[in-house]
Amino acid sequence: MPGSNAAPLPVAFDGGAAGQWRVDAIMPVIGASLPDAAFVAVRDARADDGPPPADGWRLQGFTSNLRYTKRRESEALIARQAGLGRPAASCAALIPITKSPAWWAMAQDERRAVFEAQSRHIAIGLDYLPGVARRLHHSRDLGEAFDFLTWFEFAPEETPAFDAMLARLRATPEWAFVDREVDIRLTRV
Amino acid sequence: MPGSNAAPLPVAFDGGAAGQWRVDAIMPVIGASLPDAAFVAVRDARADDGPPPADGWRLQGFTSNLRYTKRRESEALIARQAGLGRPAASCAALIPITKSPAWWAMAQDERRAVFEAQSRHIAIGLDYLPGVARRLHHSRDLGEAFDFLTWFEFAPEETPAFDAMLARLRATPEWAFVDREVDIRLTRV
Image (cartoon, rainbow over the protein chains, first blue to last red):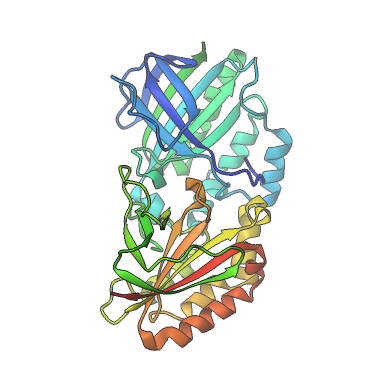
């Protein structure tokens, strides 16, 4: 969360036969999709976790400090964003993304320029607060297949707005650096 | 490494009875020290690693993309830096650091301002290239006790220059945000 010094939280998303969230759709956006799963279990990851669910998959990441957000942007986000777990927010999306080698070869100022000056990633997200709650998890540093896992929660009536937000983001210069993206839609059980 | 899109590398530092590096000294700089150890083994970390060495300790981290470096700084670093493993570089230092909650509560632009505009962290490091080789490992996101583990390698005659570099860094505004620092000196076996 912006401006927070909370300790990083390791999180696992287990796709399989059980979980708090029923899968409505798994849609490949760029590159390969993920195998079908009936449910996704979202939980704290632990070092002694067992194997991934049989006939399923596990995606892992950790929350961390924000890597691009400036102070005034952070303050705007904090003023408007909502937390996870709101009773009315019965819809969720899990969107794993892998960025390209060209993205990771850029220096910090170049990545920031694409992210905000060219793509207005933070500004677009702000337009959908507090309706859409969001938590970003970093996966690349764990050697995972995806670089980022973003989890969104929103009320059913916010779905058109959420889809509009995704369409705007996917049309930005930043998305030219996305090599793989899967869009998983879920409903709370 | 700056400007590189190399995949993150998980690394473990095992302090104990065996390793490629003999410990010459373990010095607390800020806060608590680490237990004594005769050797440090530096190796790739794996998910199926066993327990830490008996009567020893394990520090873990991962290399990653650079978080503050601008393109022209990155180019200056690439032009001058040396890699690890040079035969003449028989001295090493492992410096684990934990930054304060106040550091992590800052936004990206505020951290960058302290790091370089106020403290000239990159510029100071450049003054000691290529004599001192360096690899940064991130640990905070793994829930480790330290936030960063920096590994340095240099020839014995570079030791006074290395010490001078540390003295300059420790005198910067950035170091007001360091809550814990240990300085471990080693010689290749």
